[in-house]
Image 1 (spheres, rainbow, N blue to C red):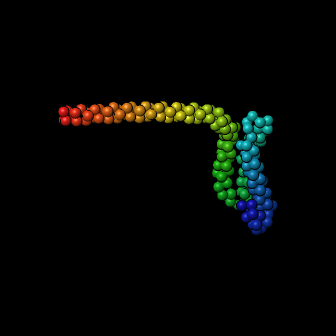
Image 2: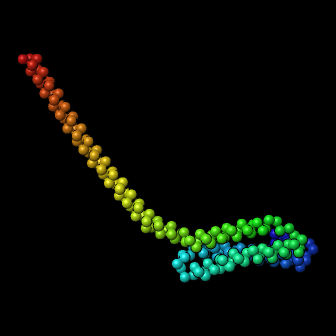
Image 3: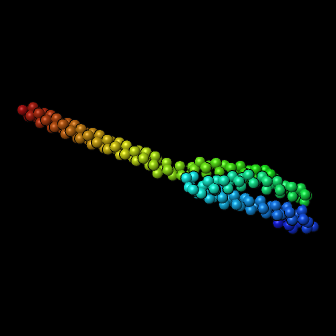
Amino acid sequence: METAIRAAEPKTPANEATAVAIHGLAADVQEMVRIAAQHLSTSSTDSIFADLDQRFKDSLEQLPKSTDRILEACRTANVSSGDLSSSISTLRSSFAEILRLSTLDTNNQSANISLTTARDRAITAVTAIDELVEAFKTRADQDVADSRASYDQGLIYILIGCVVGLAVGFG
């Protein structure tokens, strides 16, 4: 958009002012992305977090003012601003959500839960599974021993029956 306005003929101060305003907005958005990245990667307990948080909030408040300057410059230069207002509104709400989630410090909370509570519960679950497997193994070993004893006893009864049958049959 900036390039199109700068290339427009005739070159007027209004067109140049519009291009400068657009360039300023692009720089503001780029700075917000940089601050957002720092904000996300900084723990809320870190000493620089408060400064980053304030800079991020200030940038969010500045965004509509930059947009208003561009819209005014576009009106002055008779240049279409397209859907700039809705795009900036969407961008601003997205950055506000990033700020909200970063302030909640969800990354560090997630890491903390993963390294403490979730780890302890996983160990407890694995221990319970091991105990269950051991109980099944003990029960299976007992069932095998019972089956073997029943088989052996049945075999003895069959052999005794055969011997008694042979003795009665020959006797």
